[in-house]
Image (cartoon, rainbow, N blue to C red; front, side, top):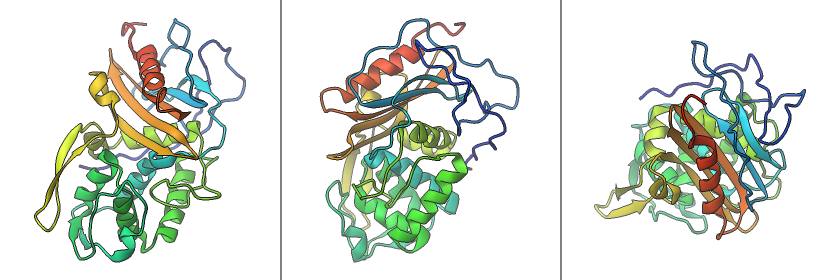
Length: 294
C-alpha cells in the first residue's frame, strides 16, 4: 500500500490544553487539518483532564492536529523504542518493502529485546517491519537501518532529516532502536508529530494495530509475536502504536484510538511500570469517550 505523505505545513493550529487558555504562540509541526475539505476542529473535552503520574505527556487530535492536553510536552528526554516509529517512516520512504536482504553479524550486535535473527538469514523489509513495530526487536532495527543507509550511523542522518522535514525541531536521533545514547533525545510534542505522520500510512496502521502474529524465520523456525502494547487488548477502540522502555527514558507509550468519529494520539513518556498503562488509558478515554457531536 502506498505511504501517504504528511501535508506541507502551511498553517499552524492554536495550542489549547485542558484547563488552560489558548496561548498566543502556536506549536510547530502539526500543520493544518489532514482532509482537503473543511473539518471541524476538535473541541477540548468538557471534563478536566485526568491526573497522571508520567513526567511528560501530550494528547493530539489526529485529524486537525489540535493539542488537547499537554504536560511538559517540550521537555527533552530519552524516548526509547517509541522512536522506532520514525525508523519505520524512514524505511517506508526508501520504498520497495518486498526487497529481500541478508542479515550480517553486525545486525545482531545489540542488547536485548532481540528477535534472534541470525547472520546469513534472508528476509524482506516488510516482514522485518512487522517485527520491529509489534515486538520491538533491536536487531531488526539495526538490520533495517543497514538495508536503507548502509550503517547505523548513516541511518541516523536519514532519521534526523526526516524528523526535520516533519517539523520535529527538538529531537536528535543517533540510532534506529532507541537504546540510550549520549546526545540522543526527543520530546512528547515531537513524538506526537512523528506518530501523526506514521498513522497516515495505511501500511503502518495495519502493523501497529496487530495484536499478535506468527513470524517465519528463514530457516523454517516460527515464533508467535505478541504486541507489546497492552492497551490494544484493554480498549476495543485502541488501534496502535508503540511502546518503549529504558532506564534513562522510563516507561513510554504512544497510543492511538478511534471512537465516535474522532482519532486521538496519546504520548506518555517517563512513566513507571505501575502507571504507564493507567496514564495512557485515562488520556485515551478522556479524549475519545464523548459524543461525536461534542
